[in-house]
Image (spheres, rainbow, N blue to C red):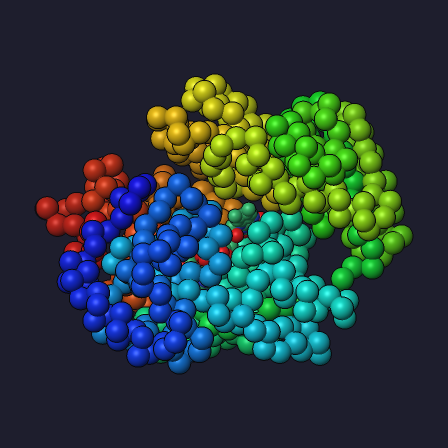
Length: 498
Ligand SMILES: Cc1cc2nc3c(=O)[nH]c(=O)nc-3n(C[C@H](O)[C@H](O)[C@H](O)COP(=O)(O)OP(=O)(O)OC[C@H]3O[C@@H](n4cnc5c(N)ncnc54)[C@H](O)[C@@H]3O)c2cc1C
């Protein structure tokens, strides 16, 4: 295993692997249990490919009953479990553990019901994000949150990460578009939270589960809102001589009370990489590019485009182009949506960060990133969900050059520290996973973290679900002087330290 320190493998579980595999085969027969090294290789990493680990065994259940029995079994014998959807997590959320069952939900791939009266779709968690939109598009509907990975990522993974995308500025993140879930707890209990309505009585358990990164239970069904496609949608490409001007334009558009369907920003390196890759028609002589989409009734869109162009002009934009057809609008977005793979073509490796800042801090953070780029000697391409203040700096490095991966990680950590320093947060949509786990004390104090760990304990007191993710290594916290140790007693002595 390369990468961050993970919990020490449980020796008993490793010793009993053969029996565990046999027992799991009884629960999930046929091809649902994968235990050879060669076949398990396909699952050894997720979107954070710098880290790899073969799991104890891979299990691909097909029914809720099988999920329940697998979890009940693991609970009884103290076997760890890592849930996985499509494995596109960029924070290492689905990174396997040597002593853990990797519970892959990809065979849960059916649309169960489309209920246009209530404007909802009920789907299994392995359905891809785009699969939901495709299922309702023919009737003029769509599912709004649209991560760039939407062709591959699963809705179960979206719920676990509270995924976002270009259209979340106006239509909300996953948490605002999921109305209900079915979930299996580690003891095998199947619970249903929420339904087809907008709000439920009692604590907001649905809100708690959304973004819980596979630590509280395994999602087996999701009810999402579907929306009518807007009558018109048009995108405007606006180029600026500096990122600061583009950042100010974003602030002014929101300040004017306009909520675009999407408002994204790319810097020069990202623009060039995307243009070379998909030929979206981006200007190559600008430092920053905004893509602003306005949607709604045609007359409203027309008026808003005028207003946006006026605001862009007052911020010194040097180019502005409005999409004249649906095909052109799609092409404008194609570059942005392919920005990550495009950057992959200009650098052997890249490390994608995900921090969120108050919009007004953008110039300060961009300047900070430029000095960090010089300090570490690594280039950075920037792609932002500008309207939400969600940054995706892509740090370019070459893993074959000794020390570069470490420098890229240190650079990334410094960017996230900077985000927290200016009043932002460690993640906008990719989750904490293992990637940002050890930075959690930068943002939360001991009381905050302990409170979150208590929630985890309420659902999974043995810490069997996705251990080593989200919560920092506790002994390391102590080393960092961030954990209060009173008279030699660690708080929460029952929580496993690794
Ligand atoms: C090129 C690229 C672009 C991306 N762009 C975006 C973007 O624009 N916006 C964005 O938000 N993300 C983006 N991502 C990140 C990623 O696609 C999302 O985090 C996505 O939600 C992960 O879904 P998945 O099915 O791949 O989950 P996985 O990677 O398999 O798992 C992610 C986490 O969810 C948990 N999990 C998965 N399924 C379940 C389940 N059924 N029950 C309980 N827990 C579960 C896992 O344990 C893990 O912690 C991008 C990734 C890539 C590679």
